[in-house]
Length: 480
Image 1: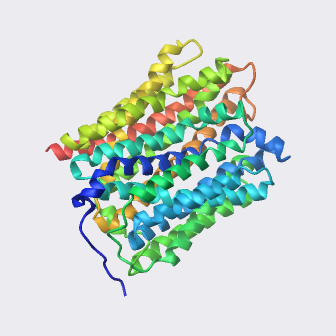
Image 2: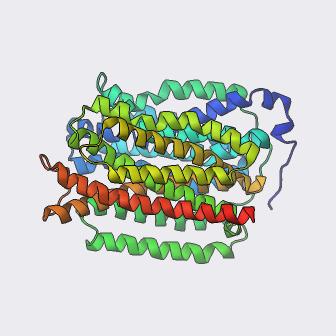
Image 3: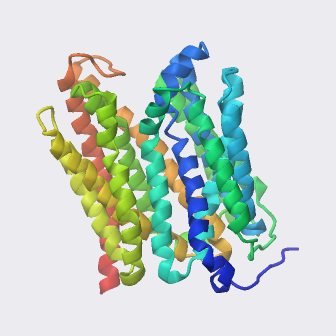
């Protein structure tokens, strides 16, 4: 029988409040590392392919398996955090993530690497699903936006800084060190966490809906394998269509099954809260938009403009640097004036940056392109922290774990769909312009790429405008 375990709030515990900013650092560092490992591997794939003696399309599964495992497990660990304590799940996640990172660095075989990568993702999903819930429980309402702003900064820095950091490591060290980098930082963070993270005060010990989890996991795995494999062999192949059909059937079964459970994996009543649902949708759409930029901008700078990878990396770092500065400030302002206006302003700035990319060509001054990169970083910095605050503050304390899991899932789904849609639109438009099927950058044909880039950012602009419109309507309703 389910039992509630409730004690005094962390927000009234002087010892916890004394260490709350150190707790934020410990949670934030693991958030950064787990997000970083979704993007840092891409730049090392050619080296891995050569060292492991495998084709490039097999090496790409080192990236794909991480995203698949993370997304498949986020909701389960969010629910387990509510049932057994978010801090307990977070601690376990840090151990599995560091162990997986250690094993990933050994140059054994593709099978060994994929298993180690899965273990790493297993731990990452435990930390991703509980980080926002821990911060929401510990920080008082007047500081919550600022604290979640810092977490948002760690997420964004990790999601976009991967290629730059990975490139610096590969310039002087073997590829295993992109994983081993996590080990000393992770161990240090675990030591800090052991000293300052309190024991959980809230746990409901309710049974876990493993039937719903299995349906959801099959949905995610079949969908993502279909997306990743479809990019390699084509989306019209029977096996890909079969995987998508399986995903649709399993998700339909999940929607039918969940409302009939006493303790479902997802309580659909959460989505009746318009602040929660609209903020999730907006967050998902903006991560889709951001990953259009992640996919296309390196091609534009390094191939079309013939800029060295080092200089291109410095230019692209404008995005996370500006966001890291803006996000905590926006969170702090959100604590005073409320989040609705800031989310709208942030989305307007992101939309303007997409218009800038849409007008960018081979003659655009680099300083102007850098201004567009900084503008999207500023927009994300203003948007992300207040949006996360709205998600996490719109649910009760007993649902913080699953809310954090859903929020992280929306973010990761945005990454996957952003990459998939961006590459599909880019190469589809390039093929249309060139008159032949194109699957890569065409040397000495920068005009073909620019055509595809403009088509891609036109789609990104539409996606961003949908999010802007939704938040604009919400803002108008609030002010009436």
